[in-house]
Amino acid sequence: MRIYLNGKFVNSHEARVSVFDHGLLYGDGVFEGIRSYDGLVFKLREHIQRLYESAHTLMLKIPMEQAELVNVVKQTLRVNQLRNAYIRLVVTRGEGDLGLDPRKCGRPTVFVIADKIELYPKKLYEEGLALITVATQRNVPEALNPQIKSLNYLNNILAKIEAITAGYEEAIMLSPSGYVTECTGENLFIVKDKQLLTPPPYIGVLRGITRQAVMELGKELRLQVREELLTRHDLFNAQECFLTGTAAEIVPVVKIDGRAIGAGAPGAITKKLQRAFHQLTKTAGIRY
Ligand code: PXG
Image 1 (cartoon, helix red, strand yellow):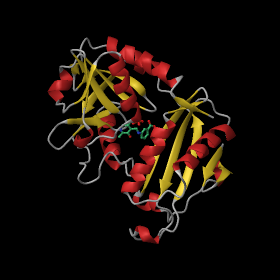
Image 2 (cartoon, protein in one colour):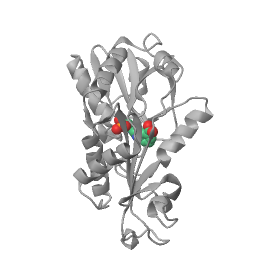
Image 3 (tube, protein in one colour):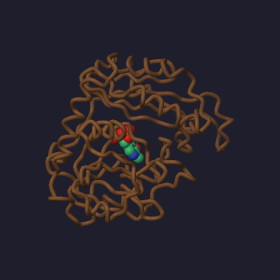
């Protein structure tokens, strides 16, 4: 496997970063997870733009233009001869010393990994997921805005550990006031009376690229699509619920905190959106 690292392609065993890299020492950096489908990178420009916006808020200057980074991603896929891939793009503050001061880091570290995609089991999509809400609250935007896709994922990892410890695969995280935010690596939607509802970014969620695509598909399917504050009660009494994310795509949710959602099986609108999404992946990408 060839990895892009700071301007060069190197073999994976040579792809090393310093123990003084502030991405490692402090989680000071940003990343993206991107997918390609049959030779098309899905929503590549949107992912690149989100990466640059996350970096801008951190005052982390990515040492190349967006168009150049788009080309690096395409090149990494070509060099590794991958047509269906998972791409991880990482930019860290770079190598510094044993202090937080970002001014000590001379040059950001940039790397791109493209690997075969590990698909989730088919059973997950056919049977749907059972979820629990967890005690670990989602980061508040006033402290560390979840819209920044930073290398600091401990908030999500703590929630994931709670879910796993309780015997579940994924957790629903709430805001400090008890509103639904998102899962540890996916956004959440519910369907109720022809409405497609998802929590608004200001409550503390990542603006998922898949989330955005699904909102647009929902409108095309003549659903009323809205960002709305949701409580656990709203989830329990939804007709359908599903999660969205680059790796997971659209995953039905059939049980939350022991309550069956709708009929307790993947819903009709969820299935329609899954089909529409798969169609979109065949057209909405950038060729490489
Ligand atoms: N919320 C959070 C907190 C995320 O990390 C999403 C939502 C979905 O966003 P996209 O843009 O992918 O629709 C994410 C996704 C993975 C993986 O391998 C995904 C994410 C982070 C780490 C790993 O699926 N982010």
